[in-house]
Amino acid sequence: MIYESYIGIKDGIVNYVGKNPIPSREQIDLKSRYILPGYIDAHIHIESSMMIPSQYARAVVPRGTTCVIADPHEIANVKGIEGIKFMIEDSKRVPLKFYFMIPSCVPATHLETSGATIGVDEIKKLRRFDKIIGLGEVMNFPGVISRNKDVMNKIYACKDMPIDGHAPGLKGLDLCNYISAGILSDHESAEKEEAFEKLSLGMWVMIREGSASKNLSDLIGIVTKENSRRFMLVIDDKHVEDLLVDGDIDHVLRKAISNGLDPIDAIRMVTLNPAEYYGLRHLGGVSPGKFADLVVVDSLKDFDADLVMIDGKIVAKNGKYLQKVKEKLSNKSIMKTINLREIYPEDLTKKYFGEKGSVTVRVIGVVEHQIHTKELRHNLGVKDGKLVSDTEHDILKICVVERHKNSGRIGKGFVKGFGLKKGAIASSIAHDSHNIIVVGVDDNDMCLAVNRLREIGGGIIAVNDNRILGEVPLPVAGLMSNWKAENIVVNLKKLYEEVSKLGCSLDAPLMTLSFLALPVIPELKITDYGLVDVKKFDFVDLIVS
Image (cartoon, one colour):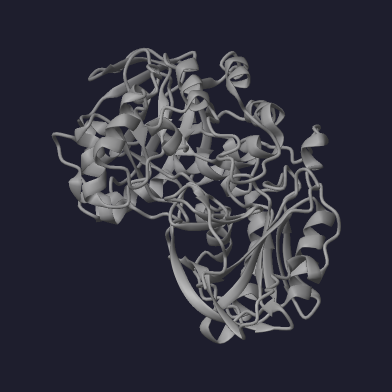
């Protein structure tokens, strides 16, 4: 609903909305502009931005985001409760309202090695933490459907809180079993039919538009006036450069409206709807009793924020963040998380002990702009008892190096879609356990990339001909930097340029790489234990025949 009004604010709370002015100590004339509730991002993994919470706020608040619901399962997989504590404490340094979900799947599965475990006892402890409001996405959907005792105990421990879902491709009886466990929402729908079934069964549907997964254009058509109150627009995962160039929730609003969604419905999906879903009754609207978290815009098409208020204080104006954020960190243990020995080319070799001159292998097929993959087959040559990459057909070696417990374990496979003609790229961001993932043409370059990340405490890197071409250090748990967004992006741009020179044609190669180790998103993934058939939820052999 749009109408002209005066708004009164006292002690950070909206205390008046009406047609007539009331006495005040200070007035701001916003005539002919729209005053909206501050945007709420209902599902975000802050770590994917490569920024710590305080720097993340600096990037998104000028865009109109005044509240985020964060699932810190990335850092939890590396540092457990200590990592979650870090995120909560760092978030208190800034006015942006951060709320956190308890990571439900740490590790995400038994198919990989993580740096920590969040079990029922840890969940009960985390429930008492400030800013914790629910249980994060339950990714182990096979465990839910089969009523696995450990999984169900976690859900039961949070039965009186919102419980987020993660149900890619589930339908029919499996979906009903998943929902009946008490799971209320889902953000993994990729097709209209999938989203509509979840909606019709009572789920809240989060439409995701991030850096790697872009589902809005495919799903927005099912939103109507009658059902729009059960939808939310979310980011999930977004890289820092995309936040600076495209925007945050404001970008999703623009895209939703350009795809035909009514502006009022779109605004509700990032304000009132998430506030009601999460039980944040003081957020999501401009009415007496709500926090004075407001966004002022000229247009309900562009959503460029002229002014942003949080708790009645102006925190951003004309795209500029008005708060100071120190980059120095006091928690040193959060910056020492790469625990592995130096690796050598023979560590990455996939040996073949048969007599054939070539073999058929399973290959991870990248699907651009998506985090799911395809299982492909390809015939690879054998040389000196070793499987050889086929760069002519874009079949490259990919490895996951365990980095938490110094086990020496390395998963080996092949991938199609990166297009590299030389060199290697590597990252300590590898969802969800965040071991080091590396893809390349040359084993020596792959080793240099991994060993350099070991030296700098994590990050992302490009290497060729035994030379480091570019790197972005991410010393906070191997996932984040304490730098400003602009400083990270300068290094990233150089890195992307170098990756492109290596032959890669993907729009977001490092984001794509980071999801290839996630064994809860179909079809074929790789962990430090080897190849995983996600639908079977089990390991499969690299060599088929």
